Length: 277
Image (cartoon, rainbow, N blue to C red):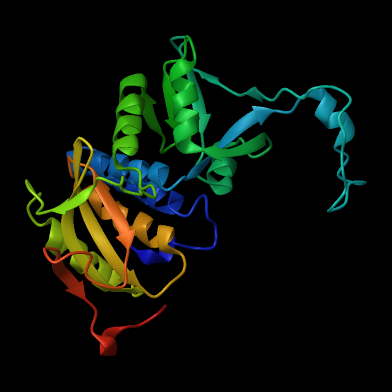
């Protein structure tokens, strides 16, 4: 996965990769792996709090107070009534309703929706709200020549996979203890070590172990890193967990040394190879 996509936009950093996956699917629509890659990328984007753009109708009350010729940066605007933004929907030839979303402003312009008002919103939260909408068939990503339709079943499945893999800070309970990991997915340790070596130079060492906390067993990557932004490192490592579809809980923790005697050192960066972008 190209690290060039980790740019300065904290909410839409993976959307270019979603667009790339859509293009690859259209170049070879009979290849099931292409749509699978797209779904994996959407899951990763949701797990990392990615945003999409939602076209909306601007309420008349908002048009009255938002005067672009008079408003300056820092101005405070007060509405005299509640503002209700109406979601724009699409209707196909069969009369079925779908909700459009976009991965970028450029894609909105290409679709002809560039003149619409837009809201940037968490993809996973919007998917949850969509499933509560009545009489709506699905979601269309980037309506136009290269659009992707997600029906309700697909949206629900993507959300379930996202929640199963979403990286969150975890503090073990007082009775938790380290254990030797069991039922490890083949190639997990090697793939993680290779990914980190090629893409995350801030990581210096990784130990791999298991942890038993209450009634749950999980895998644990203990990471020594040269950065204060630990959660970003964990999120990036978690992309590999999602792509490999590991079917048991995986936790991450920051450490300076081996977390316990049974932990396995699976990665150590050579000092001469340590390079920052």
